[in-house]
Length: 407
Image (cartoon, rainbow, N blue to C red; front, side):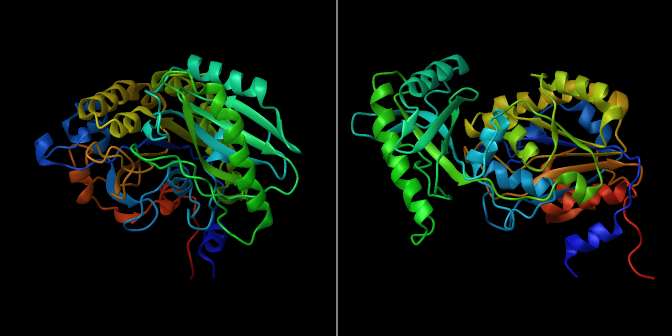
C-alpha cells in the first residue's frame, strides 16, 4: 500500500491544535573559528530552554543525504509533501505569495536585482539588499516599458528588498527552465535552457526569457547598485493535493515574506496578512486560535544572517525569536514543532545539506531530559534522524490523529 494512502486511511478528525514554527535556515555547524559553537548554542534562549525540558528532539534530513534544498523543497517537506515527488518552481511560489492570480499556462520566474560589472560579471547577487522602495521603483520602470513581448503579456511585481517576480502569460509556454543565475559572484549570468530539449513550450519560453533580458537590461543599466537581475525557478504551477484534505486539519499561514505565503497558498493554507514581526505573528496566532487547527508560522531572519555569514546576527535573530516566544505560549497548541526548513551555516553563507534540529512538544512527546534546544542536544534526542516529510505525521500522532494499524 502507498504510505500516504495508509496515513489517510488511519487519520482521525480531532479538535487538536497544531503549530509548526519555522526559523528559516536555523541549522548550523560548529567550527573552530566560533569556539565550536553554533548560533543556536551560543544564543541565550531561556524560553526555548523551558520547552526543551518537556520535549523530544532530533535532526531532520530535508531531502536526502547530501542534497542541499531550496526554500521551496525545504518547506514542502515540512508540510509532509515529498519534495522529490512534488517539485515546484520558485517563481510560482513567489507569484502566489505576492497575491498574483495565476492562470493555466502562466510561467513564473523569481528574480533578484543584482550588481553587474562592465564585463557582465555578477559582483553582488542581491545588489546590496536594496530597500523595498528601490525595488518597487525599478519594477515600475520595467513594467512601464515592457508590457508585451510578441504574443506574450508580461507582468512584473516587486517583492521585498531585492526580490521581484515576472509572470509570462501567453500560448504554448512551459517550464521548467535552467536558471539565469550563476548562484555565486564572479561569474556571468548564464542563458536559460529548456530542461527538456524536445519540449517546444520550453524552447519558446527560453527564447522569450532571452528577449526579456534584451529589453529589460538597458532600462536599468545606469542604476546603482541594481543595474542587472537574475532569474530562477522558471516554471508553471503544478497540481498539489490540498493540505486540509490530506491531513484533516484546517491550516493557516503567518508569514511575512511573499515566498512563504506562496508556498502555504500552494497547498491551500489561508494566508493571514498584516503581522510584520514575530511578536505580531504570535499575537495574531492568539486571535486566530479558535479559527484554525494548524498554524504555520515562519521567521526569516536566521536565514538572512546565515547567508551573510554573520554569526552574531544569527545568534541575535534567535534571541529575538526567543524573547517573543512567551506570546505564543499563552495559548499552547496541543502539538508544537520548532525547527528550520534547512540549515544555513554561517561558514557556508548559504543553504546546506546538514540536517536541521527539531523540537517536538506535546503531552505525549515525552522528555528527552535535555536542558536546551541545540544541534548537539538534538543529536541525542529520541526522535533520531528522519526525513522532514515525516514531521507532520509525527505531529498528527502526538495529537492522537491516527487509528491503530492492524489487529
